[in-house]
Image (cartoon, rainbow, N blue to C red):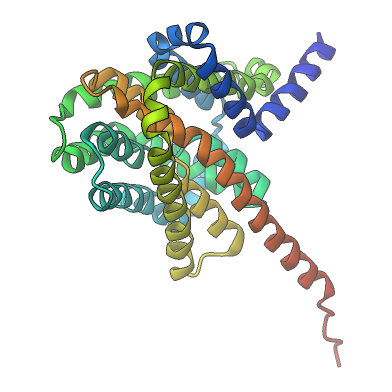
Length: 329
């Protein structure tokens, strides 16, 4: 049994590290084999619930302590999360004169909390993982209020938004699964630890199925507007990370924590955007597309950003190593 778990752990680690490539591969497969993936859209909320339950299982009491031990950085990250990304999304929709469906989808992405993939990317970047996890927890727990409120304010110019219906959707697919995961970990922590390494693999499978379903259903529309959406998503993601980086630097945040904030701000829970679009805006089918493409793009761009920041960490480490202590007189 231990050998099997070790093999699964290796597969899980590989899947987490190369999630962007895996998503692209299965998205291509879904595009050409639509019947094999189209049915998955019926279970988008279920798949997202599984992902968030897995997130809840990974949350420990120490993670909440990390929030209170870094209040300045957590507040900067949370405020930046729910200001920079929504505002950039709205500006892009206006400047690029996007049609209603796509504008709604872009704004949904911008108004979502931080995604769990940000924790993995922060780790690869050599950033402060504890801070990243703390910011993800805070933004996720705030999502039942902040996401519907921001979508209601920003997307109202394009479509009619039902605030309370969205609140209910976020509570069902985000808050309840996360709280159940935390509860299970609290009651049976030792047993959860034995299978905790499997959860990233399950999350990768779930996000691949969410995106695969969206690609299969919207294959024809992707041919018509895929390049436009990719461009908007890329600019949105880039602006989020760069402005998050700038916000952290303005407040003189230390390098590894600046990395965590930038990644957290730029990487959204785009699976939630897809789920909300499918559940609350059935009359706007293209609204699911920006979230699906963002899921692919932010993992690729995040990995590139992580490698750049990682090299910065290595340079700082070399500088500290080469610094010779001043001899005492």
